[in-house]
Each structure stands twice: as structure tokens, then as C-alpha cells.
Image 1: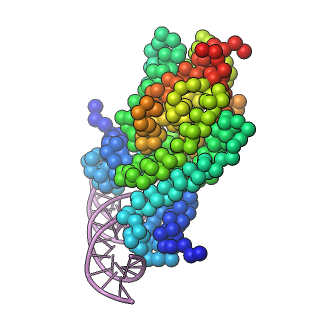
Image 2: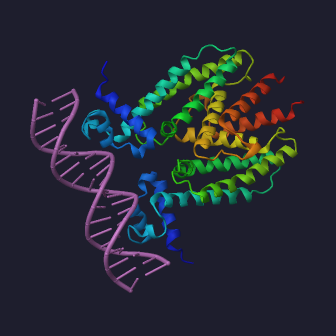
Image 3: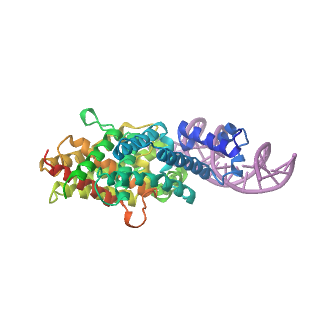
Amino acid sequence: MKKDTRTLLIDAAADLLDKGGPAEVTLREVGRLAGVSHNAPYKHFASKEELLSAVVGREFELQSQAISGLNVQRSPLEALRTLTRGYIEWARTHPARFKLAFADWKHESNELAQSAAKARVSFVTLVANAQAKKELPAGNPERIAWLLLALVHGACDLALSGHLSATGKGAADPEHLADDLIKLLSIAAKKRS
Amino acid sequence: MKKDTRTLLIDAAADLLDKGGPAEVTLREVGRLAGVSHNAPYKHFASKEELLSAVVGREFELQSQAISGLNVQRSPLEALRTLTRGYIEWARTHPARFKLAFADWKHESNELAQSAAKARVSFVTLVANAQAKKELPAGNPERIAWLLLALVHGACDLALSGHLSATGKGAADPEHLADDLIKLLSIAAKKRS
DNA sequence: ACCTGAACACCGTTCAAGT
DNA sequence: ACCTGAACACCGTTCAAGT
């Protein structure tokens, strides 16, 4: 099955992005890697920004599939742990895609917002499941989902930019911080109100 | 008191950055705003990246001064709340500086790392104070400081890139999420072990 | 020591033209 | 419908020269 030019262009852009960030993604090199001329991309994307947006959109799609495909774990809390691990893994292996996914989108495409939103719906469901089993405190599940996501995202972003490398015993990597928050949440869940 | 050229260049770069991100910061325009030629910046900075790095360095310096200048509040917990509010305010009013501060620094200057580290020392001290008054759970103060910083940072980053705008009752802004975490921490502090 | 003006290589984008 | 090659404007960077 041959890939169409559009897909080849996105593949090439993703590769270059991984290699050296958005600056490394030149339309000339993208075209070369895809085997077309340096401005063939304009027949598929209105601008370089739209091409990069397509790369990010595909990332969100993959992520939302990964979440949906999560096997039922021993407990909802365990599933949440797996989920955060996946997010951290993604940020570590594809830092440029991670950074770009949360960059400022001047022409914020509606399509991009939708694929991102889709990826988060399953996440909120997991939280609600954990609440039903009293493994997380009561309250709006979206709010708790945001709390978890914000922490994991922030820890990844700080780690990637080298702002989290504590020395010695204070060492805190994203995995540890995520576990810390989940622990705090389960403590609050067990507290009699 | 006349500002020297170097300061004028940093001022101009910061202004352009606020206006439209790093792409808007062209050395030609920086020079024009500073009243010098388009390549005079090269007599003060080795590259555009170093100029931007200087802008970020100044931001961290200002932040560390702001933390040090925090008046003693009614409680350490209240001081932490004020601190997070300041961070969020900074991210909201200068989103481009915020994003740039945590971008990938290819030539990660040692100077930049130091000014960032300096800004965090006072933060850890605040956490330790709160622990001494039993307002935060025991444990490594750095670890708890990272937890707070990661959450607030992540919430700001998600909010800026439009990934946090929940609809209706699930609405979560950085301030709410920060309060949620501080609440969770104080619950854990009060729990008998 | 600091600055200027010309020049170079590179890149995003446009356009007229080809199949 | 999709692609090509030339061309344009812009930008980071370098260099020889000025005070």
C-alpha cells in the first residue's frame, strides 16, 4: 500500500521535527524527503504552520487511541498510573512534538482543538471510574483530571527544559511527582468528611 | 541615567517578543528600536539565541527578586498562595516570555541555569517554613516544591495553549488548580500517620 | 571598544506554466 | 488535480572598513 504524498509530507516533517525542532523543518527538505519539489507541500497545506499542525494533530489522534486501548487494569488508579506513564514516555521520546503540541497556535485550527479534546474525554472517564470505586475523592471528575494532567504536563515540560534536575535526595522526575499527586488524592479519598 | 546599548537591545527584544513571539524578534528591528544598525547586536551577543537568552535571564532575575521580597504573610501557606498567584500572573501577562523561558536551549547557558536555580531556592525555603508550622506534610521540601511548581507551571502552559478551557462547571483555571493542590497537601498534613 | 554598510546563504511564499 | 522551476522578500550571520 503506497502512502499518498500528503502522508509522506507529514512523515518527513515529523522526522525533521524530531531531529532539531521546528527550525529544522524546512519545506525544501520536507519536499526532498517526500520525493517532490520544494513547494509541492503548498498543494496540501496552506503554510508551514499548517503542515506542523497536521503533525501535531496526528500525535493527538495516536494518543487518544492509546488511551482508548488501555486494558482494564487491576484498579482504575492503576490505569491512571499507566496513562501518566504513557504521557511521560511520549514527552521523553518525542520532546519536539511535545513542545510543539502546546505551542502558541496563531491560526488555532478547530480540527486540532477537536482531536485534543477527544484525547481527554477518555481520560476524564478513567477518573470518574476511580471515583466510583472511592479510589479518588468525590467532586467534579473533570477538575481532578485537569489537576493530574496539569501536573504531569508541567513536570514533563520542566524536565525537558532542564528545570527539574534536582541534585541528590531532592531529585524529582515526572514519574515520582505523578505518583506523589495520586497518593495525595487517595489520602483525601480515604479521609472521612 | 542613560541606558547602555546592551540594555536597550534587551529591552527592544523583550518588546518584540511580547508582540509576536520569537519570530517577531528580528535583529534588524531590534537594532532599529535601539537606534543602532541591524548588526550592532553582534557586538554584544554572539547570536539571536543569546540575545533571547539574555531576555529570559532577566526574567528569572526579576522573579527571584519578587520571591525574596515577599512580605511575611499571615501564614507560610498564604505566602505560597501569593507566590503561585504571581507566577500565574507572569505567565498571563507575558506569555511569550513564559513560553521562551522553558523552550529548548540548544546552547544551554550556564548563566541561565544559575539564575533559574536562584529563583527556586527561596521557593523551597517557603515550603520548609510551611512544613515547620505543620501546614504542609513532612518530607523533602524540594520534592513538595517541585510538585507545586510543576502543577502551576503545567496549568499555565495548558491554559496558554488553550488546552485547559473546560466548558461549564468543569472549568479549571490555574488559580483553582493551585488551590486544589495546596488543599490536598494540607489535608495530608493533618492526617495522623 | 563599538559601530556601519554591503554581501552571502537560506527560507517561506508566490506565480506562471506544465501534465 | 497535482506538480515544477524561477523569482521575490526577508532574515541571520559574516566581513572589511570606519571612529
